[in-house]
Image (cartoon, rainbow, N blue to C red; front, side, top):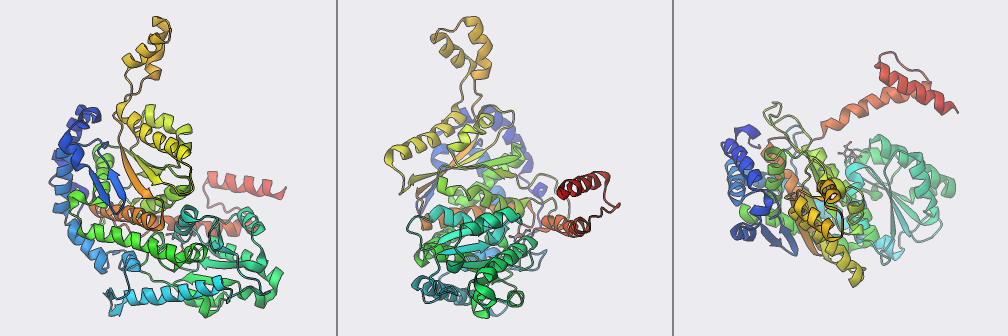
Length: 548
Ligand code: F6P
């Protein structure tokens, strides 16, 4: 059982609050010149650098945060997670996505069963299936070799594989991976327009095999297959990834084509399980293995690195500092690599579905804030969209800048430009530009003193705004696995320290429940008077316009 702490139980709380005031007064521009602090706030693991000395926190406060983490029993919580204690206590489950990364022979017994050998049993089936697809041993109904794979799923059954396939795919990919998630018929239409039915393999990915969006898309795509290939032919193009093996059978999927996983794998932590079959099919076995190896390196780092050098622990602590002591409500994640376009959306589910909670493990309402709003998109595009607010807006936003030292498909010139921007933006947030500097610059360009004085405030930047740099040596499968698992662990550590349960997601239920009667009323063209006035008006408007 996880220790039932509330955030305000920490004896460190008052001191940290006072420290936050003095750190703010001192300011980042002063803090950054402390040599000891600078040396402390940089950690490297397996080709991932975490340089976080541009966080607005003094070394003294950081040490106090680390001491708070020790006091909380975090080391024991990490051990509990890694060894399969049922720490998802609202659903009475273990949380064992780390077991998916273990090597064959690393036994981990849960309820008398060696979960690692179960994981590898399914993995072997995935590998064998992918091999047969790649070799042409398994073909489509008309004898054509599979060239395309559609992953139908949503949330954790979509975002992880989509993010990885986009990050690591290339013209060398074994198959073209397509993703269908939203219950928007146009999305289905567009995906299917790109896929030749005779050579398309379809994976229905759903932990529960009940998710409305996924099941609707699965029906549409099956009908498309049936129209082109007939009932029997369609079956040869379908496979399922689910814990609901019986439900997949009822949908008409051959048992041989069902790849299972377990209730101890949360959807948003599931890309390492059979949910990653599209990765294996599109990118090959070696890529999937290296991805797992990278994540395993992060697991070992979490388990063994001292808190002072433990990247996810430090990411979590600086995040809590930003959220609870500096009062910053959002956190931007900006990767400088187009291939990481889906990284922030992936992280949004990972972080916000885990720690967007308001009750602690004692069932009490939280006294402070928990998970921040995670947002962002790729740089440099982001610079030309919302960086204005990051530099001069009235809300301070801490930013994770993710950079990559080598992008194999880029060219030296573009890559240096990209990285120059990556570096300069962090520097600009830190340094800022005073009114006097702005004034002098305009005067030196010939502006009149009156006009320069008027414009100077608009052209000045307060600076001292916090950021952290994460740098990968290369965007390869190992390093991507490492990066993703570091964030997974950060989310776990933060949830533990906030005192929330990170592994359930009851908050998504109510909307799903209410959608059922709304859908029935839309189908019947009747609006129930039990809805509030606003909802009734919206429904009527939709029904009226829909007619046309
Ligand atoms: O609605 C949220 C959620 O339950 C996520 O946690 C999950 O990743 C997603 O829906 C998809 O669920 P499933 O894999 O069961 O279709």
